[in-house]
Image 1 (cartoon, rainbow, N blue to C red):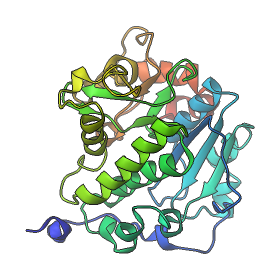
Image 2 (tube, rainbow, N blue to C red):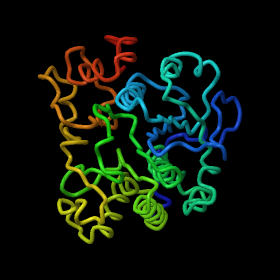
Image 3 (tube, rainbow, N blue to C red):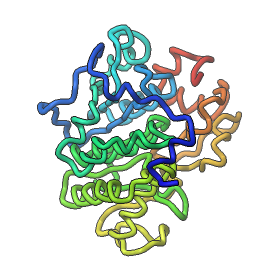
Length: 313
């Protein structure tokens, strides 16, 4: 079966909210939007119109560790007045460096190399509509604004100020991750962002879950670094683009994500972020003595103590 017909054999996610233009309390991203180079971008693509405690924790942790940076939370669907003025969105609005904006995907892709792919509906011809749309949007945001993109299932533990302007991190020895990326507005950052968008368009696959996220970053860096061996990718081999080790951004690999939900000793010191791998852990209970709970208490205390024993549910 052709890749763009793969979705016909599966039930698929409802992403109709991406194309709704009413009942929205969020200001839209328009031509006046010009975030500073020190910006962090989050994308909410679930169509739920709210933030659960885990996602809110990610945003708070970024805001606390980067008090002088601008934290942008882009919703791909509408947020009602009720949700805007209650719950976690209301709590996070009290942070001066966090702002919430509505992203309309067709307008967002207009004038970029991905305009035709988005308009042709390729992102709707997949079993993983939400995931692949999220892949698309992260590269678009970095292409348009530069800055840092972070997934909403990460806890940010340290400032990125001491890192090079353009960077990614290895998930393991075979792949460079796309859950946290930094493309600056300098020549190198713009070049990598342009190549990433073109790779996304030319190699898009709706039938493979990770092909359009980590797959894009790994393929692009293979060209820039002139090697297919992920462990050989570094600033010296990648024209100044930093490729950090997994211990700094993915200290616990997907297969061992359950360890965050165990009553273990203090979390390992050193990582810039901790990836909670919500793809497989969303139903896990966050016990109060677990590693995840202790990370939340330290890096997103406002959200954590608003929930306490119910955090993560």
